[in-house]
Image 1 (tube, rainbow, N blue to C red):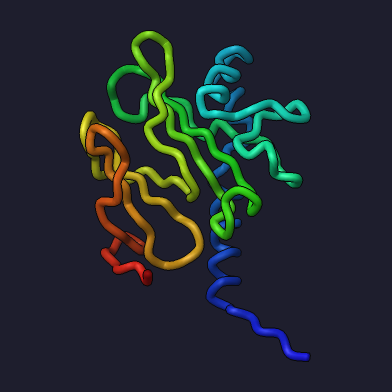
Image 2: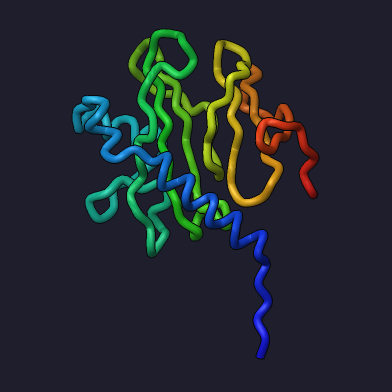
Length: 170
């Protein structure tokens, strides 16, 4: 019996897992000095639920782990803290194995969801409306979408691989 192995897929998966391991800060919440109530408000705004003592964006995942507050800072330069909440797992995110919710802090202390979906978020130097940075959504493969905030939503602006324009295989 022979087995078929797609080495490109294996290499891409290893690269994604290595990136996730290197980019995930340990105890990001503690490093930001957030109270438990503030952390809870961020996770609730992201749509996370508590299960087994952990916040989860994908609570139905039988092997799911905890969601992470990846970033808590003023991302767009408006003077209010914003948040990037991430999660991982095949159950909800498929071969990308990563999901996210980007939240904008509001003047009244509320949160607004700017974008959410599957992929590994990498903020880029380019900026859209209101100072929001472009987002490269990484994952398996070699040509990734770069999203730009247009004032209503993050929409695909271009595709890149290692900083160069590319065309996705559709």
